[in-house]
Image (cartoon, rainbow, N blue to C red; front, side, top):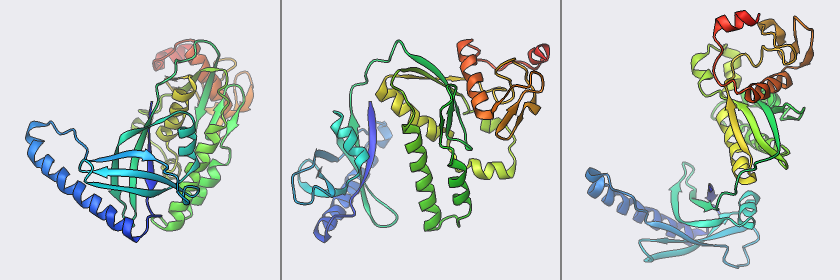
Length: 310
């Protein structure tokens, strides 16, 4: 397992910032030299910056994550204070080890960042446990087939983003808060005895579907891939599997009688026009996702097959 972290070096003093600029200039010069030399042979696989240690004991350790960088072998070396945050500390306390390679970059605001990676052997997947269907969406972050609802306030965060001037600090802050909210909500999912989490495979849907302007304006601030990546990270660490099924008609199909009709769903409410079953629309969809996985229905039903059902 590999995880990447970006650490801000904004806490560095004037002397250390000057050294960072020396690091950066040396790295760029050496990298450009090797690109020019080896590019025709497509054999460039070398890094001149290395992160050797974390957390040297100093009086600043309580508010900074200290990291030691080496460049050009060991001709340049420095301990630098990186902005500390608890998410990285959780990984370090859980037995993850620092990969020796690192990347130094200069942000558009003039702040230096160091990108590091942590590694840990992947545990074996569970062979027993619950199988749960999950519906990911922009109205609720996640709804499971066992009735768990996470991220119900997501529309409020998206509305806040849409009300801000794009490119402004307030807009950026609203996006960051939305991402933190989604991460916090997805971390609340109980995976203690979960063997398989089943979701829809939506990667191709957005490319082949016509979506209204208002809906698209909200969808651009909701990332299916981002939410799925967060769940995949948890799955890798917590030993459960994520399975994806075809999403066709999961929002229109009645999970009780199987009747497929576009009139079954109206926004967040689901009411079957045939058997009159009522439920939260996302809960109904998650039950269909689970049923599709259990039936191993992994392909899109043809129109004639749907007509035969009707």
